Length: 169
Image (cartoon, rainbow, N blue to C red; front, side):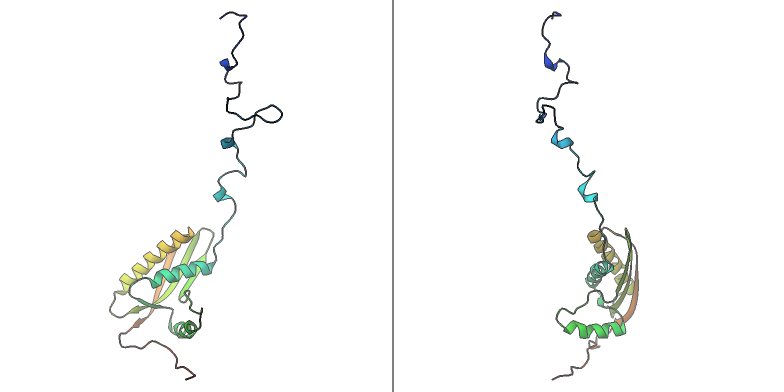
């Protein structure tokens, strides 16, 4: 090639825009669409999510009730009051017997349960703990640091359900 021959524009690719780079109205080049970053980072990390104690309590209550051997949630007075509330449409409380303390990334739970007679309380408590931890962590993303379980009663086979006598007949 002689010194007088015209140079090919692609000889210096570092200074020339790629053929597929879009042109701006003023004649310059615009950054490729895949290189544009708006808002700085992953959209999932923009903002903050807070989870109320009651949400965690409902999840834990449902998970605990799913375990075989759990007869009811809550103790004496709470269960008696709950039976009345359960008769009211929409009154069933899945949070009965559950107390949650929720932080930014962790939660701790206290559960009060009634077990069926004849089951291994240790096995039921272990299963409740595992089920509650799995459900809460899966649904909320919070780390469950502890699940304290208090067994407040045993449901005997011949016991009737605690329900007050109806006032109207």
